[in-house]
Amino acid sequence: MTPSASTRPFARMPGQSVDLDDAARLLLRVALGLLFLLHGIAKVYGGIAPVMAAVTHAGLPAALGYLVYVGEVVAPLLLIAGVWTRAAAIVVAINMVVAVALVHSGQLASLSTTGGWAIELQALYLVMALAVALLGAGRFSAGRADGRWN
Image 1 (tube, rainbow, N blue to C red):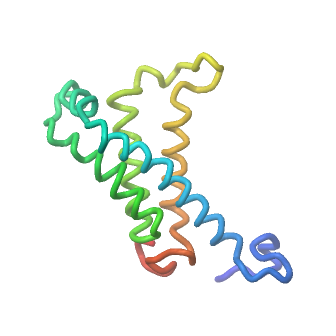
Image 2 (cartoon, rainbow, N blue to C red):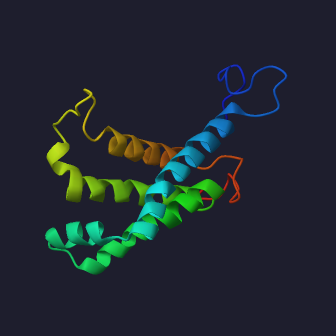
């Protein structure tokens, strides 16, 4: 059952031709994609030696460190384009869980020097990725809003 305009009063304002739900999906997935892509670009230019070190320190094969390129370059590009959006968001969420487990686990119960949670950025990325995975790409996407993984 599709909600009517009366049950979703802010989805479309009177005289407005753009559905705010789809605009919010666009804003959320593009913001997540762009911000996360910057982490990937830094690893493309600076190398992934720290990632490899963290992976091997955890007893995992070093080759798994290359998956950071999938999580921080490929997935964000898919999010920005709106193609395979839900799958890309799940990859970003998994990337964040692994990053917290390998690098930030000691900060889970810590506050930063400014009083915020020490891993608030990682938590924000994780929650944004989960929200995109649940909401999908929306109408303003290259992969169409009605696709299973969009």
